[in-house]
Amino acid sequence: SGISVEQLFAWCEKEDFDVIDGLIDKSWVIHNRITDEVHLHPLISDLMQEELALDPESCRAYIQNLTDACTNTFNTEWQEKQKLLDYTKTACERVPEDSELLKMVCLARASMLQDIWAYGESEKLYREVLAHTQKPEERARLHHHISHVQILNGFYESGLETAWKGLSELEGISLCEMSRELGYYYNELLRRISEANRHLGHYEEAVRYARKAVEECGDFYVTSKECSRGWAEYHLARSLFESGEWDESETVIRHAYSLFEKVGDEWSTEYC
Image 1: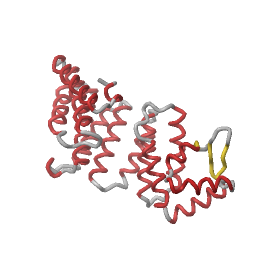
Image 2: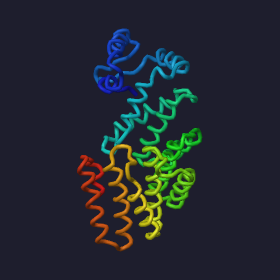
Image 3: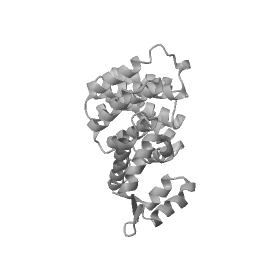
Image 4: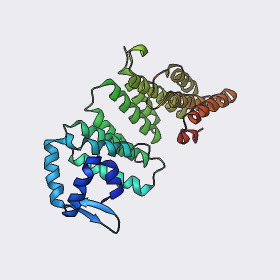
């Protein structure tokens, strides 16, 4: 399938616009004027694949824009999600295995698969990336993602086990030694432990680890402090509710809502 002209130019650098127009004029890029979509001439596609193997960095901007497009697609139409999945599938097949770009696009595809509830495929891809990852921040992030899709898929024991495995790799690293990113995913793992215990009916453990997540979220965040703390409080409120602490649960969830509202996070407020 092709890609819309509007999307293509959104993903490319401005200095590439004239080049793309020239390729369309020469029919090396085929433009369907009815659908306003473009696709590469098969010969050019094969040549580009050969060049990509020699210099994968030449398409870093495209891969980065593709991964950005795959972020937060919860309210994206199904047809658009399918197109993004097709693009990531092609990129996964063509980016060389030893390129850091492959990890980027595989994570984007795994996230998209998670969004369309293909949890098994998503987990498989996350695990493939984990097997080739060494950095503590990235391993913590991947253990969080794997645990999350396992919980979403109803495999609560597995999700709990994965979250504990992620935490075990961080033993010996104090909070003050953690980077902002590592601390954030450490906190996410605490939330996964709380969430899995909640689904398993272990409400005391769920509350315990949710409180720990709230107490230790501090300056650890990826998007904003408010969202980081808000989600920690969301899980605490859910766990308190299940354990019968309804008054405290209401207080906590109202505060979480106010944090999401403060930063204009409409998607998160829907969960409160």
